[in-house]
Length: 251
Image 1 (cartoon, rainbow, N blue to C red):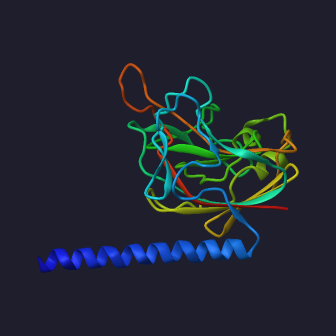
Image 2: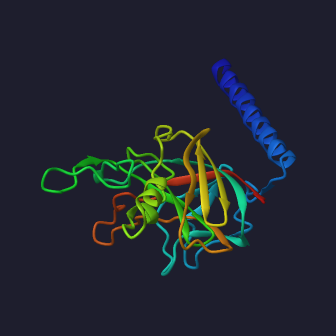
Image 3: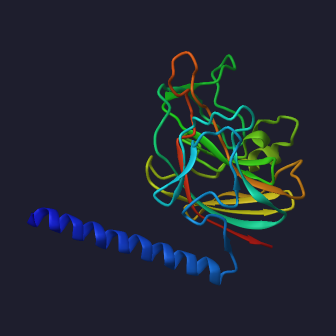
């Protein structure tokens, strides 16, 4: 009984500490002119894909996604409002990997991938999860488990019609991700068609050009992977991801 009483008291103190920390964070962002995009209780202010069947949900005060949305079309979670220029704070973490190793290339600082003498990409077989923060409808900054680190502007880096400077700007300057299960903090600035991403206090994307960025659009969290109908298991690189403390300031 004494041990149980001790455990309950410890859990209660921990809960108070967590709630106090959240309140302090909220006060900070409010003082800085941000407003919250997530109330911690439900998905008010967010557009859940029709037919999702509860795979985008709120668990323990965070947005949780298990990659299993049953929506027939777009499975991403989108804000109801649209934004033009803004600063966005989002905390995120992966809660697990896909079931099988995934072929992961080594991305070089110029946007190319490390290849052998014949030009074949050199890959590592790694467990992986994959998601992203969608910016103004078309822009995306990646969240994943690749060695290059999160923050990459995938479609910009991959497009060889862009200049070397533009492609290199889309590659994270370093891997600032925390280990699986730990929370990461993204601070994203979008101004016109320029994007800056700070990951856990480190600038990983610095005022990079994102050609074709819409003038105004919604913010989204990306579905990736999903269930394999034949095996009934998750496909590789699925979005086993959570989000919390989502704040925005229009600039």
